[in-house]
Image (cartoon, rainbow over all chains, first blue to last red; front, side):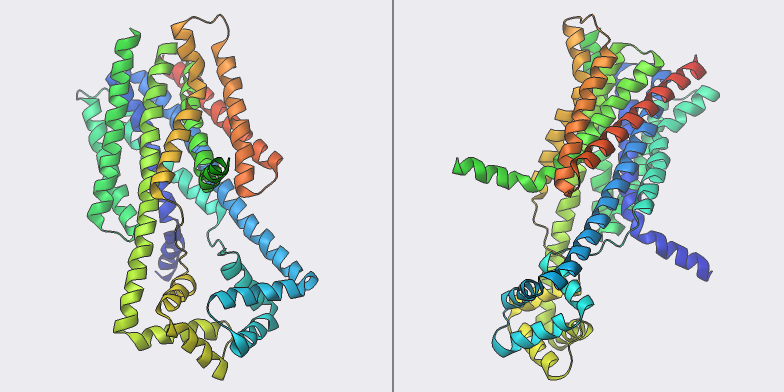
Length: 235
Length: 235
């Protein structure tokens, strides 16, 4: 049980990636569904382009998220190494920088001198103050690989929801309105994603859910009517 | 000229939104193009679903970016207001918090007392230290509306590139391989986006360009083969 608890704890910082990956995945595939239904295109087009978009967008988005997080981490390390070097080579300039930071906080005279002396006495402490208060850079705590991985899984998993019923119908025909089933399942997905979004952002649950469901609904309506109108125009 | 310079300066912080909005827009529509060509679908399907995805995804993505930025801003304001209230109601607890922060930095004894006294003497200064060093929250400087707006414009503008030649061909038939033209134009778009990404991230230009062009190419290859294979499977 201890193990399980610590695993959940480890994943918790990535709930934001799960929320945004899932949202983007379902909007992308549901746009294909709604656009195709609006234009009266065949179910096979929904399956073909739904999966093409799901896999290509999911790949691009998660690798993009990985690269962006990796760059941020590298940037932090680069600036930190540079700061460490500067402390040796331009010692006085860097000390002056700490003096400037604390002078802006309202320190002056003998107290300012003592504060600057104490901070610059320990190199690690000095670099920490320089990074956080001088460069306003906090150390990125999340793993780029996990950011990319969670985004990918969530994009595929939630993005599959709008398509699932069309695949099932192809394998074993369902005598129901597929668009209604797909829309209902997708709305339920948006509901859960909105709930989780409220948890991530520490806002009201109702706000998270209503925002996400409205956003998804409007996007679907847009896709449906764009599909409908262009079909009329082109035929 | 003064005016123009300050306008560019005002937009500069949003270059990141332009890069990521443009990347997502072109990957989304190019996935429709590549998937459709791979599956041998009609050009009208590319136009219909390309625009359905462009407009629906662009809407969802930019409003999503706006809402996320707005929530962060609101969260900051909420915590700042709470901190201001706490300074009145649980004055000693909050003062102890500042003492803890500076004690962790290595301050002690008389110097620690003096530092805590100076910081807690001015309410604005006190709240600033609490937010930045206690809660690790920096004030969001970017406007949520601009974040959403720039994302939207970039998504539509760059996302239009893969579709443009199919629209032109519909209006006035071009006797060329449309997929080759679309791919070339899209690759040029990825090239520029990669360049701008390197500027935003302060990394090497070649790294930004090669990452972005490879990412887009792999996504397009995935979409093409998913389209091709599913078409074989379904027909």
